[in-house]
Length: 496
Length: 119
Image 1 (spheres, chains in turn orange, blue):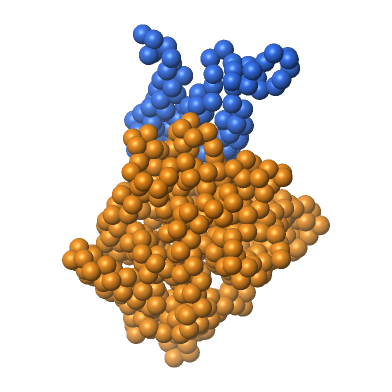
Image 2: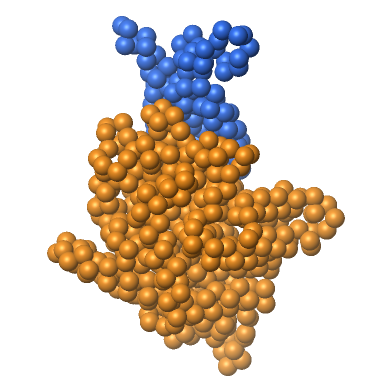
């Protein structure tokens, strides 16, 4: 059995090795993220069977928990680490062809650090360590949003940096309060001290509020999502893909882990449900009114975050595994969409939706990938979005409350809006010709390069495979849901 | 009066946090906003230190045979603050370098005038 700490040590080590390798040859440095993510992918998938039996607790420095920093590789952590590594691998292969200008070595270093931070957040069992990995993730994403150094990128990065830093500052205040009350930083130990009453005293409630608000900035739930459309639309295509696919999911994970495992606060579930629906509706309606395709995709991410938070807030096995399934399918589909859009924008030279007319003939494969990604996000049957949404709807109806029936109707209304704006683009790409084409009969083919098509194809295979045969993943996610719902098993697993 | 004395560290920490938030909300100049961010982070660091501080306590080292563990300052928050300071330095350095880039593009640091992306 491999030690899960390698999931963090290898990418972190490779990140700092990259500048040295670049002295020898830039060519080698480009392949470092691919190698690191391939390693993570293999290791995390190979760990899944053993963590399903019992979570692997890694002690660092020989201190048994609750002392020292420990890693908790439970089903949820390893599943998310596998998703991060998979999407990270696809996007790093895409980056081989896309990232050519500017400080490419620094790009690869920051990219690996971002993924290390994301993996660290989902695997750690120590709340301050979680904060440190979260900051590694955030700081490298601030820098990567501004990577191209153009006007919009820098402005979006400044905005993201200010809001993100306030968010992580608030989260740190929450951690300080928790440490002041309990004198421990181990999440399982804090959870044991809080107990199972479900009623929090004022001090603990303030700590919970600070942490949910602070980490909620990265999760981009409704009142805290002002930075997202700018940052995701101004970043280079691979970075948009990784931010939408991975970074916001990590934010959701932190919020959920804190609410479910650390505090065990049922009073927050209804808040999550309501925030989720509001976020969904606002995100989808804003996306509908956009003319810029990347902004539209960014707002669509806001909507999907709302759907995920709604599903997780139901706090039933069906709801949580539906939400987690949606996390996976959205990570695959949205990164596919951003990757496909990257070259469509590159070829057409504009981010306006109207400039994509006739793209179906110019770039048939890329457009096909975009279409399937869009269909999956909307939730059409043979693709990965369908089982996720179906599970969420089924879980909401199984609650047997009028309120949830009403809310799921609003969610489905949001999905219809989503379908409207995605089909508008598909229609523009396939069924309207380019406005001024001097030799339309020749059909100029300008496909994306091979290194960009290969990861899109890989993501496509996963989307279709998950849509056709979701059983094994659903079984895996059911045990992830059990990990979130039974906090005593988590506490017992860590503290013994 | 004794309440103020006993909680003076917490009052200072919350004061610094609020001053920082006020600066970030009210000031137009990006450099001043970054200074506000620095205030905010310093306030949080003071809060963390205050959580483990004992008035008149000593360093947690048994350098003298009749020292008692109860009168020692908790070292963990100080280690946390050390980490938080390093993170804060990284954030501030990045923010200032982005401010330089923003000035090159727009010729101003006034956030009210930089409105390309619907602030």
